[in-house]
Length: 288
Image (spheres, rainbow, N blue to C red):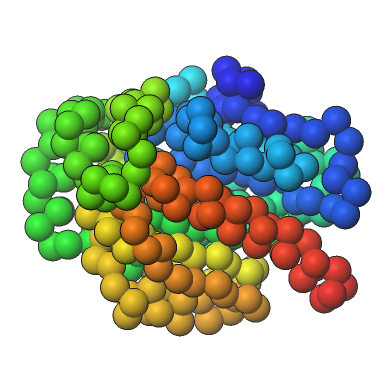
């Protein structure tokens, strides 16, 4: 379902009538820039449907500044600022929908991944079991910052669809013929402040943010990502920065562009994330 309200944020969900017998976390999915929560619910590529099929409750929220969620002043529309607003929403979501679940598992993509990592680094008492991050790295190409800074001087900006498709997808053959068109249902404007922040402040703070995370982390970066500097060394560096995480699973996703969910590896990628979420439940039991 869509058009719902979760802790003051709009979004969509697949919630269970009863707890999964073996236990499952409440998954919260946080979308990237220029997409709404519909990113996680595109027909045939839906993380929400895949979670429901595996008896895992899931909510995909619209971040502040997206869909029917409230806008933030530019000074608060940074990665860290928006993460603080989402953290407060998560407390209410947990109170409303956490019954029977052993904890929360965060999934974040792109800028949403940076925000999810920021939340995990300062959880404010949230019962976080684990984190899955994708589409975000340590460094963006140097040429990207002046391009973002040259965007129109407006609170929100719109990326032309042809340009966006070139950035978000790998080469022909890495995605089905129905893509990228099928993804356009999730397209929207993005707060300019967060676009500038991901190519600016994030570079300076990412290692400290990752180093403060104390829960298991699943990390995937697309081999053919156009928005980040991507190679095995960068993936290894991201993993090594997670110095306090008790369990790190980091790898390249071969044959995928930035929006891995929409590529032919998407089903495998989503199942990896959901499987890791269930593994985190076992880790919690093992560690008491």
